[in-house]
Length: 262
Ligand SMILES: NC(=O)c1ccc[n+]([C@@H]2O[C@H](COP(=O)([O-])OP(=O)(O)OC[C@H]3O[C@@H](n4cnc5c(N)ncnc54)[C@H](OP(=O)(O)O)[C@@H]3O)[C@@H](O)[C@H]2O)c1
Image 1 (cartoon, helix red, strand yellow):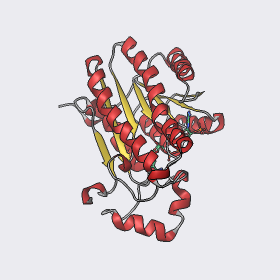
Image 2 (cartoon, rainbow, N blue to C red):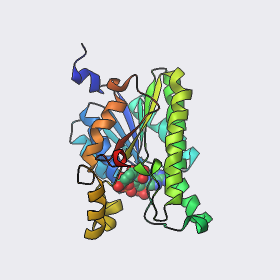
Image 3 (cartoon, rainbow, N blue to C red):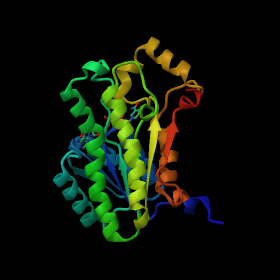
Image 4 (cartoon, rainbow, N blue to C red):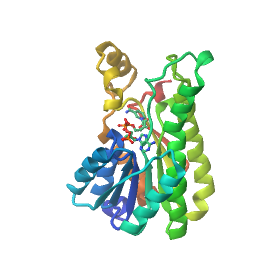
């Protein structure tokens, strides 16, 4: 029987974490490094990336930071070329760019086109272009690979609070996860998604800072707390390691049981 350290180990592998300077991206980068992967953190802000790369290096793994715009296909192609040039290969891409849910809230019948485009760019195109570039490199490498997307419980659940664009964008991530899994299985590439409820991060700090709002959320979650970035690391390792070899096209809810109650 294969040992757990072999099943979940990522020695010799290279993981690209898009949005690796963000709250969830940097936590997943550190988690993947802890399993032995070399890490590329990418995003638009050099300082955040350097700080995440430092946290990764503290685990003993190699890390490089590359500035790139997930919404620009040429920038993503350059990012992947540079990563392969410096670290030799790409085995895993984690798409941790996204968000904006609470920033543009409008009634569905009046949702403005510019806000819709912003949310779609931030959550869908930002997943599309880096993945296309990384998967082309995986196909050229001929060793298979892993794609992990981040959707949200909003990929499944509506919410009566002006979230049309975010709900549609995360639904698109869920659909793309299944579509890409179907198309890229022939290359030995698995594609999965994790779907958190609220995770205690700066992106939702204002909302969670309102005690009444937080109590309302926590009371709907059977495990009676919001998520932490650490809650996402185990599922990430499952999907990105050989432990998840026969799992593809799946979306795992990481929500303390919230969707189980709906
Ligand atoms: N936090 C939650 O409660 C929660 C719950 C469910 C799902 N999620 C999802 O989890 C993902 C990560 O969320 P988070 O809380 O970690 O957000 P975050 O801290 O804001 O991280 C997102 C990262 O993406 C980067 N980014 C944004 N636009 C980019 C672009 N065009 N090109 C490259 N990088 C870009 C940002 O850095 P720069 O701006 O410096 O580039 C930032 O570091 C999102 O998809 C979000 O929807 C979060």
